[in-house]
Length: 631
Image 1 (tube, rainbow, N blue to C red):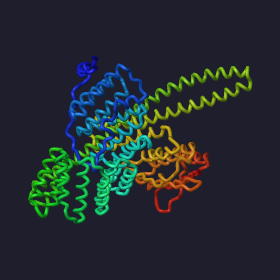
Image 2 (cartoon, helix red, strand yellow):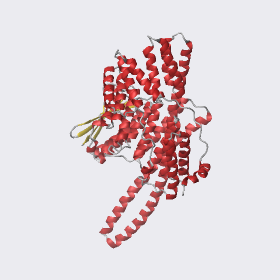
Image 3 (cartoon, rainbow, N blue to C red):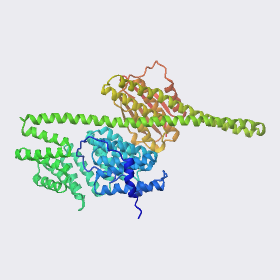
């Protein structure tokens, strides 16, 4: 009987190198269930549904054999063996330039590293998989990879970065086909907003996830997250009611670990509300967690029991805290040890060793957190650099195509002029048509030339300057990160300025992306009322004109205003869309003539029957502009 597995040993020798060494990563207990997009990122069956890449049958046999091998080890939870086959799958796909299986291999490796809590490596491969799936035009897989990247950033306390990744993921999901992923996004956004103390947005996202979720077990877990938000706001009665409702919903076969979480959190609320019989519920949750090997859950139980006995039985409380510290070290979750040390301060305020350990551990965690955020920022910067490189290659190719098209145009024009002598008025039609085509080709050439010039002037010089600074002296960290952020924003700006503008219902997302491009460390951009506009009523040419106008306003703000706060207000009545822009910059000298950019903006809006005007401000410096567009 033919067995393809017998060929795997020589392939292992050829392709499988030594595994890179990664340091241990820290971990923390999240809010509620940490949802994975799938047990594995993609199945063999779903591979056959992707038609955008031609996979040779001989290659498919090898790849599917590796996937089956990896899958069997995954069922056995033998992750050391899984990663060998997944790395081999990725390396063979990369060597044979098989884009489909390379994307699968990258997502598998990301999953493997995430399970092993090597989050930097997981983030790296999720990002590679995201970019590869973009080449395959598989938007669902792109969104899933972005969601996983956001979850990793949340684990590493990069809440702003996590929110950005998950919000980006939402734009790739189809509301009907990918509803479950969108629900997970709402829940994850709720977690991020809660950590950022934005309780209103956190509550809205949790409620949205709860209302849309049809699976009772997940609905109960989202309700648990909402209850934890209420507890954080000291609204313990509302939190207790929400947890009681969640527990009443769960089926008999509900996950015991998640059931223990719910009753433990309910007991926490009851303790805050001074209710009796709390201890029995705490102990019940503890027993379930011990029985099911939920070591992460045990951390919460030990902490709560220590606090419960802190006053009445301090010796027993200390025993729980000692167990909590041992378990946290075993799981490499130093945040739990910090919580234990805080309680030990209260039990033994004169013990200097606890204070020293707390300070050292806290400083170490701060350093790790900063390092992680910098690492993810650098990985995103590399991603943007790769996009800029591909953009430059596309520009070069487009220029060659324009040159060939111009040559072809000249030939056709010559034939058209010759035909004038024979066909008279009929030939004039073809001449005019060809002239129009030439103008469009010239416009394409000018656009690509401008893109190339932007990359050379704005991006290449900045990168060379930064390289020079690094080579000549050790750069200051803040200055270095600032330069990186400037280069990153420049590359994004070039991409935004030259990308195709989506109109209709997708225009809201297009406009948000444009405005968010200018939101950074030094400038805060806020919007109001954008979600209330019916963008489908705005025609395509008006969407494009509005996009160009807002971009021009933001470019002028960035170049000249020195503003730190920018605001856009959107309003819609039955016949008009009204947009008001304000900033707190240095303002505009009314005696100084308008630049060519603002003049073009006024002309552009007038051409579509709209109004753009600068409004004098009576309350100090800054700029105020109003835009009125008929719908």
